[in-house]
Every structure is written in C-alpha cells, then in structure tokens.
Amino acid sequence: QVQLVESGGGLVQAGGSLRLSCAATRRSFGTIAMGWFRQAPGKEREFVAGISWSGGVTYYTDSVKGRFTISRDNAKNTAYLQMNSLKPEDTAVYYCAARTGVSSDYVPTSAPTFGSWGQGTQVTVSS
Image (cartoon, rainbow, N blue to C red; front, side, top):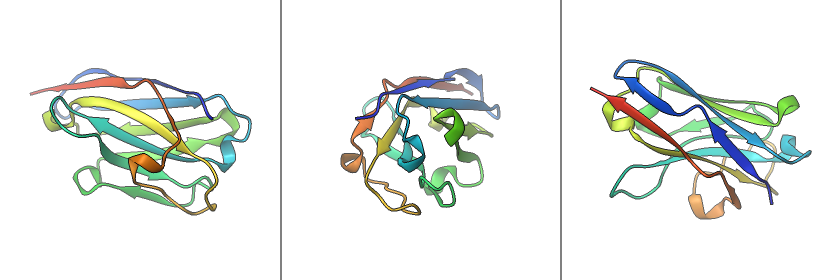
C-alpha cells in the first residue's frame, strides 16, 4: 500500500493554470506507476493522465492532450499534473493513484487496477 496526498487544487478562471501535486509515502516510489483521474458531479471517474515508473512513458486522455502534462520527481516521491488552458469542463475532483508491480515503461489507465488512491483535490474552472 502507498499513501498518497494531493494538493494544488483550487478555483481558476477559464484559460488559467494549476499544478497538482501528489506526495507518496513510500521509499520505493521510483518503482510505482502513477495516474491522475477526475470525477465530476454525476459522472463516473475517468482517467486523465498516467506515467510509467521510469518516467519515460506518459499517456493522456484525448480531451487534455496538449494542455496537461504529467511528470514525476522520484527523489521527492512526488508526481505532478500541470494543467494549462483550463476549461470549465475540467471542473472535477482530481485523484492521484498508484500501481505497483508493473514493468518500468508500463502506464496503467484502468481505475480498478490501481491499488492506492489519494483523498482528492477539487479543481473548479469558472467561465
């Protein structure tokens, strides 16, 4: 199990930027694939972005490509989601998730395959 704590959410106007952080309390963070998901009111949780534990492979859902960037700093046990050009439809609670036991360049995208989740952070984009 990995304990995850998100931060960085808030209220921003359309076109603005936010950076979410996800701090993991596990020494072997460098062997954990990370993902970001979001859930808007009345909607199912959806995959947003993922990064392999090597950091060399990333994957994004189509709606955020070119606007969001996922990254990680293994020395700080932290993953990030840089969100630019935010739109009102990006409004949701954002969750980070961790999955262990995968190969170095694998990016999981399915929520049930992640074993650990953060508490979530609210992102609200006003029009």
